[in-house]
Length: 260
Image (cartoon, rainbow, N blue to C red):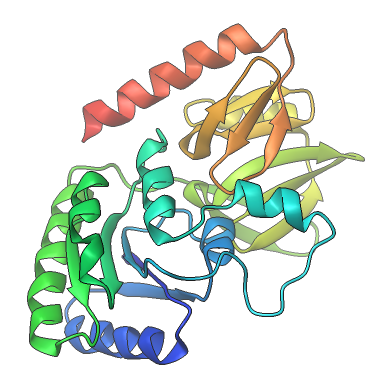
């Protein structure tokens, strides 16, 4: 499975690229998600293998309003290039290949600074797209062939059974005798003990607080008081957990780099 994201505020461009991808991927299983703003990608785009990214596009979806909009605007990247820099600055394991799709040639040199895979100019030529996309898929498949199979969390409850890939979980929260999985696609809660999940998921997750078990793949930055995840959420870290967290995180990153 190759997970592809198209982040562009123009619906016709998103649909056109999605159609080209579908036309090219006759022999590969793909999952394509479209995002109309930088906020949407940051909140739901984790785990992407290939990102088609516009450069000059809005931070927020059209018509979006939030009570803390000024603070939110400061924390969001200002454009696609800044989003790419933020992606490259993180130590998260699965960084996507980035292909810029833009109508402006002036950014071509900036694209090299963020290790972009390629740079496509609008209107996108189908033949050019085909060549670039084929090479991107080849690189992604080569990388995936060197990675272990994605592990999953099997949830068994009174009403339903559910299999959740670990790479879809940002973090797990404990609240009122339940655990809440904070997933890329939303929230899922069920009755369980966070301590038991901590023991089960010890390789990829770390308990930074009695109420939070975080996925080390999605750590964006941290301080002595909090951890910021790649989806923008900030979680308190216990002062008693900080030293062990740093050791576990560095060990995790080194292990992932060795697998590559």
